[in-house]
Length: 480
Image 1 (cartoon, helix red, strand yellow):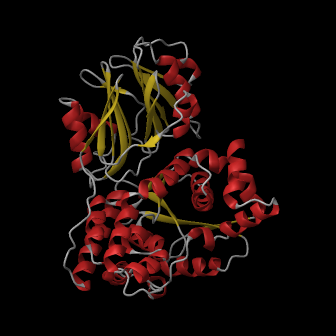
Image 2 (cartoon, rainbow, N blue to C red):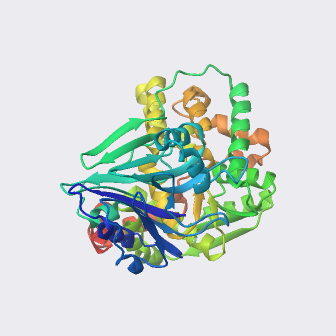
Image 3 (cartoon, rainbow, N blue to C red):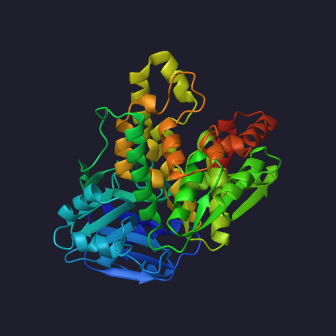
């Protein structure tokens, strides 16, 4: 995995220096190469400094930092017929050969615009790409926005990047998340977006619990199989709850060596359940316990990575950072996690309040809205944190076909009533049918920021300095 940038100088000046400045902003561990390209020329070096003296003499430049995950991964950008390409992320299929830059290049070599649309519309994946053509950029993002991509412009520049800070560095203060399932055509006149594949508010599928459970089982098996295809070992971010346990259980079913990684602050009651769940799954587990001071120590790095002082995102980001760090320290390149299940199947407790006050139809709309905004609320944060550690995050619950199926289901298959404290019933029944131990199937949801104790520590740190948590994070955000 790596990160990408792309820039157009609206005054038709050479954009090489701007592109290198953006690349130098995207720091992470174990960077192997830095690359830049005009529409006609590619330069790849071992450091950004070696690119500083290059002059590509083009107002259109794309750039990439490269860290190898799979043996087949290659430095970028690469040349196409009359353009250059960066493809960052992964396509999931039953054949690992159809997963990265070479497959993307094959689809785009005859017609870049048509090939870009085909990638987004027809393939399951987690990716973003940019193509440099004379006087133009073409950019695209997967249909759920799993891979982070941002854009913005000012009077002199129009640019895109995997992280907002690369845009901020070149004077673009107003940045936006690139819309999932879209392609953009970028010229010196700005951005023009075209929708390729997006989620629309669904017509409700009329299925009973048995039929819905059977189809969900099929989709879960297919999603996990694709996301571990070609791997010998995989780490799982493990809480002992329904979502992470089911993913670990299915990965083991397909014969990969599964290694559970769990993190928490000391003396949290969930730790014993985590041990019991790992034992029941007969899987090796690493449990890493942290001290309260570790939360404060890591805050500047977390805020630098997630790029906003949001209390919820920070409290979730800290345990994920520790998990990705420990996965990397143990030599794992791929981390599976359960993000997306709560939005798809009604896991959050706040859905009960919506159901009680506004009824079933409004609950359906709330669930749908949470899914279509999941890239901004959760996925971008998590990808940026894992990418920093050179760990590839793969999320089986974001399989697009499964997402479309889940949002079409009746809310009553997910939440039985406004007083339903268990929730996610269709997923629980699918997990039970697949063979997950009953005590895990029936475990109530407990959010990671509460289960690990991180949320409570952040509140205490803020209170000690007489701040709200948001004010406290804003203070540390300035340091970051």
